[in-house]
Image (cartoon, rainbow, N blue to C red; front, side, top):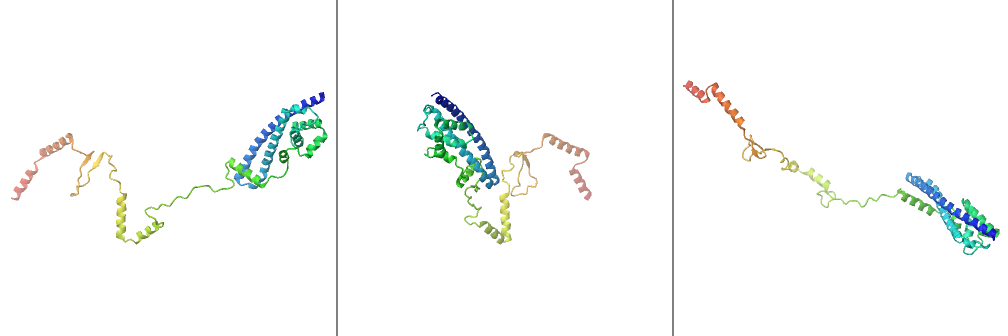
Length: 296
């Protein structure tokens, strides 16, 4: 009883160490997988499709190995939870799948703690039990474990699916797809009606018009392009346009519709000039009278 109890204790310790190691390896593989996926996205972006197809198989194999480690971790937790059933020298039917799956998969993994668990199980249940598990003669080993450990190359559909998923996750346009620009805009003519060739017909009709008609059209176009009458109303200076009856050669300049009038200083200056002219000589009337007297 004592040796069996001691073996069970060792088995519990190794099961705990195996669970911790399996979790650590899964985290490491997950971090490496992110780096590899980013590298695959860069290869797809630069167009190195053949290289990406070959290298993506490593990512697929790493994912399969991670899934295998998850299954083995669950089996180790199951054996640890049911450690009381490991006391006997005969394997309990409820633990047979977990025990034989661990024995079958442990040599094909890099987990040393799991290999220690396999050695303790072989010591506990005997060599024939171990050979039966390795050959899977009674089909007790999990089918998932067997498939995860197979070395067959991945199918082409799986490789294609991985590449497409990696491209979608990293925003790479692969396989190359035309960008969706939406429906083409509807053609709207400019004063052409339903005739799609209205522009050409308009040019032809303009060329066939006589010179007088062309001149009339030019004047009409010029009148449309003249600035509006409201332009410049904010200006403080305003010039009255000539009236229809006269040419108004001397228009009055107003400031905000107020007629400009001479100031008192200007009026005084004009009266001073008149008085100076009277002091200097005779007036115009006197000169006229003198010329009339000479003629007589």
